[in-house]
Image (cartoon, rainbow, N blue to C red; front, side, top):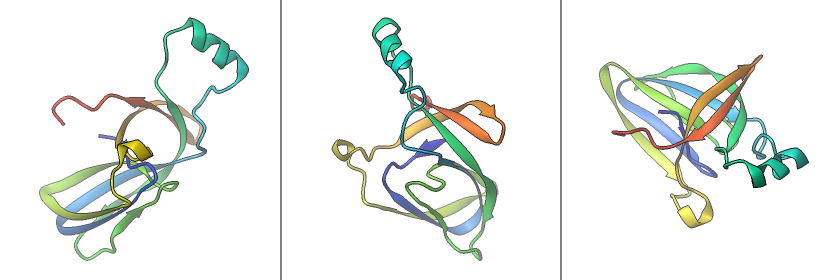
Length: 130
């Protein structure tokens, strides 16, 4: 599923098989709709999930012979991986480590809509069975 690692760098090396990565870079840190009207409506309407405008990055296919895939806090951090037909084995290095109190916990996202070359992502619950 689409997910992120806020404030973290992720280095993924494929050891066996193939791994397709689709990733998106957030355009800014501010959630969509932080204006005065949105603040007023937030007192009236139920809260809506956080949203993020992103730039898609062309998909990559990683194998044991390609360099590691690196995702940075502001580049490619919202991503999804799909293994090749024979599966894959990866080594992930994630730094700094997860720390929920510091805001470094995995979040899940879904594509809400496309706006030209940008995509609006909506934060969602962890997929069932994941």
